Length: 258
Image 1 (spheres, rainbow, N blue to C red):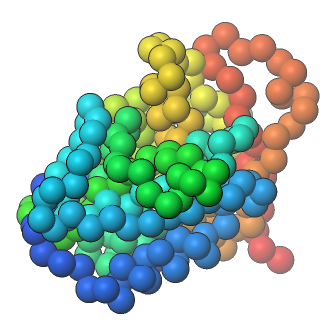
Image 2: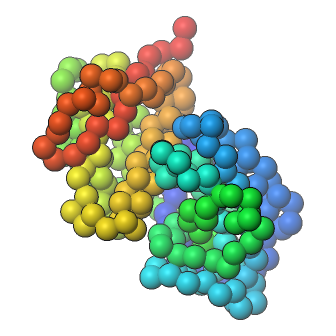
């Protein structure tokens, strides 16, 4: 199964078997992650896998999950790095789901420092993963998400391919399931907005920005599955405007491959 199919099947897993993952698969995960093109190519990132089969790792945080493995994501700290991190990681998560592994984003969770910290990169987020104790896949109909009519304002009649892209976008996971995105949709473009944060503390703002990146990865994957070319680009005129209930993020220009 491909990444697009995994969008509809992946669920967050919080209980894991204490079973080792084959060494080659661990290497494949890191290699795949290194090949994902981020939203901003000028932001250096790094991923590493930390083993915790004996359960002795000192994991700290409000939403920590005990797991046999953690994938730790590091990034240079500059404008857009959190959205870039969410975008890259969701590709990796969907890849891991297709390999039979359960995964869970761990907001505000920290692992012991490693060599990556000394290379000038910040530990952005830790991810719990391993073989799940329960179900790996879900029925997409059971996903608790807002309907498209509440997420989108449709300005024109849109083709079926655009509707399919939005269905995949709707299923994007977000911190606390807040779904902090809204869209203005035309037949060939989507204006993306981020809702204003009701709890504007640093951890929640950070998780919101990562969630936006996750959502944009779903948009990209679904567009490619529909054989559509997608280009994400900020419009200067849109950035200058003030919006009552949120902020403008980007515009997705979508058209068929020629």
